[in-house]
Each structure stands twice: as C-alpha cells, then as structure tokens.
Amino acid sequence: MLNIQDVSHLSKKEQKAYNRFVESVENGNLPVLPCIEMVLKEMKEETLNQSKIGGMPFLKSFKDIPLDENNVPMVLLAQINLDNLPEQQELFPVKEGILQFWISSEDQMYGMSENLKGNNINSRLVYIKEPITDLSLENIQAHLKSLDADNEDIPFSGAFSIEFRLSKQTITCTDYKYDEDVLALWNKVNPSFALKFNHSIINNSS
Image (cartoon, rainbow, N blue to C red; front, side, top):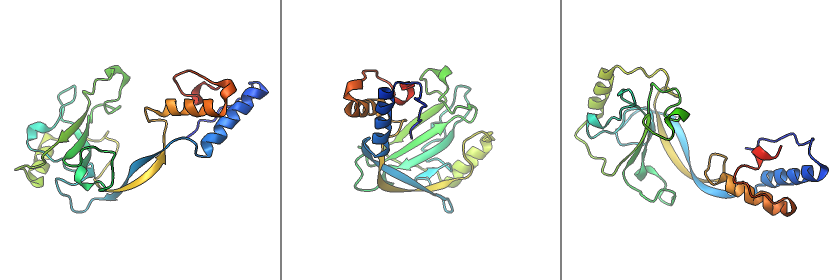
C-alpha cells in the first residue's frame, strides 16, 4: 500500500519523522473500514437477475443498452443484485434492485480518460429499482449477438458469478478520504512536523 521513498537526502530529524510515519502505517494505524468482498466463480448456469462479472445484462428493453460517444453499444462490466448482499451490510443504503456498470469496448481507458474531463459518456452506472422484464436471457443473448460487437479490448473474458462476504479493510489510496486520513496520522505521530497540505504525505515526503 505504501510507496516508500528514499529520504536519505533529508535531515536526520526529517528521516526519523518519516520512519515514524511509515512504522505507524505498517502497524495498522490507518482507519479500518467495513467492506464487502467479492468472491468470483466461473459461471455455469446464468440467470438474468444474478450478480455477475460479464455475462448477459438484465434488460427491460433492448433500448436500455447504453451507447458510448460513437453510438456503439456498451458492454456489461458488472451487475450487482442488491438483494444478494449480506443482510447485515450497511454500505449500500438501498437493499433492493440491480446496479449495473457498463463500459465502452471502443475506449481503451473504459471511460476514465482525462480527455473526457469527468464526462462519463464512455462508462455508465445504471440503477434498476424493479428488475422485472418480459425479456428472457435467450432473447438478450440473441440480440447482443446480432450487434456483432468487437469485445476484444474489454478487461476480462468469460462470465463469473459473485459471492459477497462482509469484511474489514484498511483504507486504500483509491478512497477519496485517504489523503485526509494519512495527513491526520502524519500530524499525530509528528506534531513538530505538522503539515497542512491537502494531498498525500507519501507523495510529497521526498
């Protein structure tokens, strides 16, 4: 998790401060948060409503398939049936319906390109409150096959079912609160070197 820096060019006091911080992080002093682990298994018998990576999306209409910036149908990255989540979980306030994550098969950055400047035109998050449809899995499978989409560049192959488990995890650098929590820990173990910058200590220690 840590990108350990070479701090040999710093003063002895600064090196000790940095090492105290690293030791504190390694000892687990960053916040530990509840999380939901996903255990993937190769899908054998697929259903429309189940939680999955890849596979056939739940659709009420073929028109519900999102289009990317070139009007090319997107590909289902993941589908989460909120009813499949552990009963005790409190991470998702809504506990019914389906969440779908769609990405463009034409975009090598899967909608995260800096050129898009926050526009999610090449990726989409869809919430379906009432997953009831007249379409069958076979209907959707036949329709997607008729689109003759080029899916060679998507970041996975095959389809996987998902088993969810409640767990705990130390906050990671991808969490939006990571910088704030790391800064607070640095200032706690190094009050004489307190910092006010609103960005990662680790990236600015050298």
